[in-house]
Length: 209
Image (tube, rainbow, N blue to C red; front, side, top):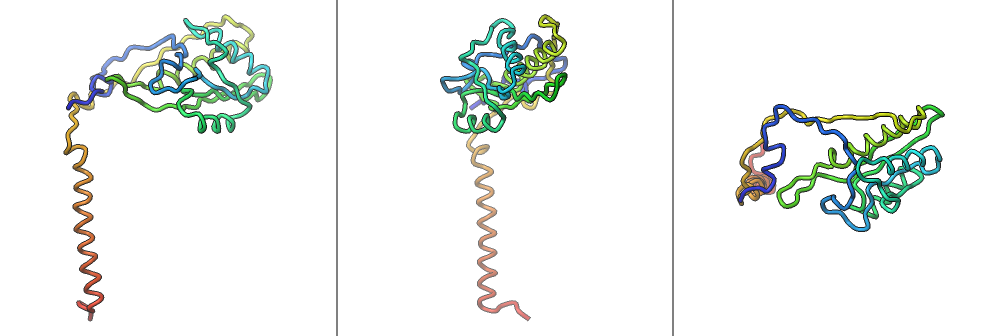
């Protein structure tokens, strides 16, 4: 049986990857294995008015699709986000954490809440699909806010690293799945027999000087 992800990039020779630009934050409904109601992203730092303005700009200026308010959830700090992620798995692909350090410095961090997933032969890369768009949006709107120009141009292109194909034909067989477990059990069985023999020798006081 051929694996369904043979068309993913790791099984293809990539010599000159194309730059991917204009990364909008995708709707959470497009995510594999999402749970409803879902959020496009969540964020922390809502005690700061300046941070709230930046997040509003991220939502309004998302390329091709303004993000509605009911698709974003805010928290005071990262700890609250962690608690929410734990109690609401698969409800949001990631989070932005903002910290207003002073009048000219606003730092941010990106937190993932996703892992690579495969559905109907397609592999979803959470880094390029969710985290990179969040990073670009946060940097763009922070820069625009600090310089005071809401129309300041901000464009990036990202490329996948060139790489050879890992495998062109991935085959799943019972031997591939159960072989390692069988060989481990086989070797452990011999080890148990040796320990049993050693224990018997000690009990009978054999091989002792």
